[in-house]
Image 1 (cartoon, rainbow, N blue to C red):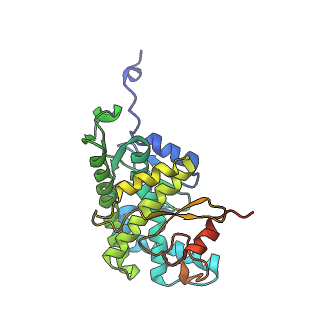
Image 2: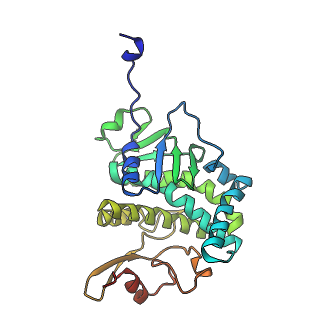
Image 3: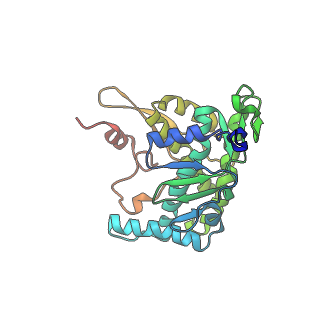
Length: 282
């Protein structure tokens, strides 16, 4: 028997199953865990999260994509701070899922330094390195290299918030000079990305109610630097049906392009308009 046949195959990443399920329900996003010896992709549309955090030429190129898309879709140019807000959303929404989805599905929380992620936005493809992860004592992965065992669910929720902050804070710093927003406003945006990304994917998974409950526990409104609670509430539809909604901690500034067409969770959208938007057409 050849020596190579005796060598154990490398164990799959403890978060790979969660990322695979993500792509099954949302084909527009693929997250791939890189092997330790694999080079991160670069060039030809790829950008590293660390490059975005530097706030230089790579960020200029990244935001040019949004500037051109706004002009193409709406026939007008957006203000530079609006373009930067759109660009931050398009990175932060999937980046937060790299942490929150494995937690939600498998109770595993990857630590992902900003140097560990590359993103190709046109393809919706992210590559990620996961040097370590947190899990509960009864997790079968607790004995794997890089595992950090925590005591209970509350401790694991703290790991989620710490892992997201570790990754997203340098990115916020890179975008901040372009956005005309203070630190609290930027963390309000990050809070919204944590909540709305997982809420949306959980809906596709058929687990929206559980996600709402867990996000309320994750963000009780007292954990800095995050801003506010998960913000969920219920409205009543025209036939007495329950319509879940939430109040965003920040504004995406889409109203600057279409004042008459605000987002359904925007603080500017009144409840009557939310009910109209959330009620299926007859």
